[in-house]
Length: 323
Ligand SMILES: [Zn+2]
Ligand SMILES: [Zn+2]
Image 1 (cartoon, rainbow, N blue to C red):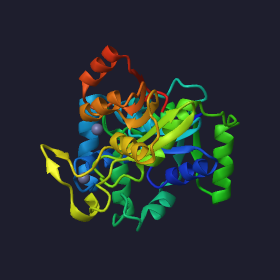
Image 2: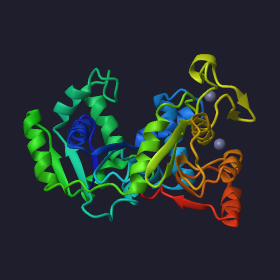
Image 3: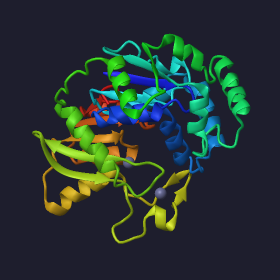
């Protein structure tokens, strides 16, 4: 089940998302995708930059891009809650999925004004009149910009948050109805989720990648991108830039192979689960190490990896849609 949450400023969108997260929903924030993009560019994610990058990404790749990127992180989780939605077109990738619900959270303006004061959001330092004027601008903005009114019109339910927290939760439950029971993950989803967890140990914040080598449903080794053992990390010593790439780290796939080598584990015929498809250098080593199947989350650059894989019979599996 996918629940999308939109609403007015200070209505309680974040509270609604964390309520569903407590129930086991995976929380995907579209603004987090933009923040990650800013980090990948090595830029400080200020509010102004995030707005600019968000507009750029939507203009370049279409309105649905942020949602697609966010979904890649979900990695097959059955229940998702999506926030930071700016317009209806962003929901295109999920609107027709089973059990999809768009909730619009609202509350009286005076109440929302009080809530937004002092939390570093729009509304801070504004008078009530200025708060209303800013909102009016957002509501009337055209396509591609904040178009809150269209989201309200399209919502499956408008949930008013003008009482206690407990009342709000009851109203959210009523709006959503029965939540389907958790289904078991497939083996591919299971190992890919482990790869995502492995990626969180990465020591270069330009790109976090996790890799897991598996044969017969047994994990042989794992790896994430990081510095040579015993040398400083990027966050301590800065990136080591060469032609626009940080070359300080050993790639996740190489580290997974190195870990197997240290332990004398045979990885011939294994499947690689990797959050981001291998670069050409890694692919060559994987091929000669006898890896027969590569399941990847995000596709990363090299088209000729796909060509070579087809040539030598390495199966390339795009798991981004299932993620
Ligand atoms: Zn780095
Ligand atoms: Zn690589």
